[in-house]
Length: 116
Image (cartoon, rainbow, N blue to C red):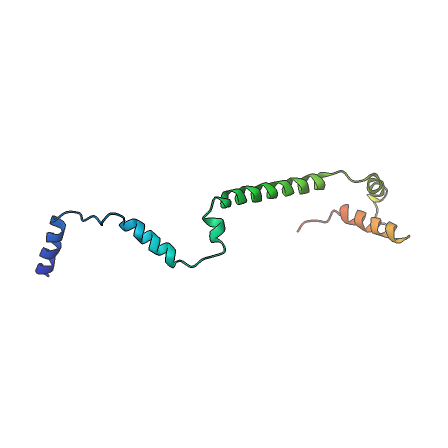
């Protein structure tokens, strides 16, 4: 054990050993040459990735704004009239198919169930 300790101390006493010039470049080159090619490598390790990320975020933002604006839109006048007629009563559904559909939609839209 003492011999090992003395050998280790002698190595430390000699100072820091630096690798030869270009050592790190050769290591990185070997790592890159042995790495498997991936379909994602084109996106991750190129200037294209930043443009792709910005374009994706812009598209998501535009789609989100479109959905938000469309959902906030006012009801058409026909639907407002049907809601006004049936807001306080749950009438039976009679009439043609369009009237039945409107009545069901109004009942669903104006339903005030208790939250449990």
